[in-house]
Amino acid sequence: MVTYLVSILLVGAVGLSSSISVAAERHVHGEAEVEISLEPSGRVSGQLRAAMDAFLPFEHVPKTDAQRKQLSQLRENLRQVSFLLSANAEAGCTQTSIQTESALFKDKAPSGHSDLELQFSLQCANPSALRQFSFDILKRPGRLKKVELEFAGPKGQSKAILTPRSPVFQLP
Image (cartoon, rainbow, N blue to C red; front, top):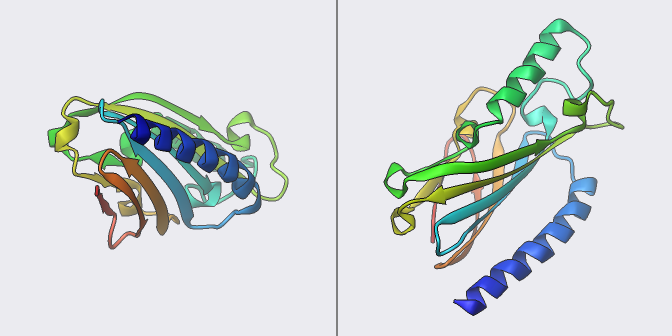
């Protein structure tokens, strides 16, 4: 148990520091990177990084009323983890927090491209029943076509590539 928690902390720390530098260098349209960890207590922590292009048809400060409305709707949608993904119902997972960050949300003109960074946590009432995550965002119309997922949990670590044709991740 202690070894597992230490490995999660190390993976998270190494992943976070390398992710920050990679995020600054890697800006791929139509793709998102997601990291999810599951603790034995049922706490699920995750983060998503993607080009804003995956969610909007533009990456600049909105110039029209229609663009302002699209950005506002996206911000509203991103207040719920269920906009992005869902766990199988038997696990009884509920959102405990979500935070989003993008230069566009601050009405700042990004230099070149704009990205979205999102962190979330869930609490699962029945973590032993948690079997899968469905990336509902891939089922919606839009430009997001690929999610590169890294998962760490009590039963091991796993990586997956999810697409609109295959949007479900089965836990190890």
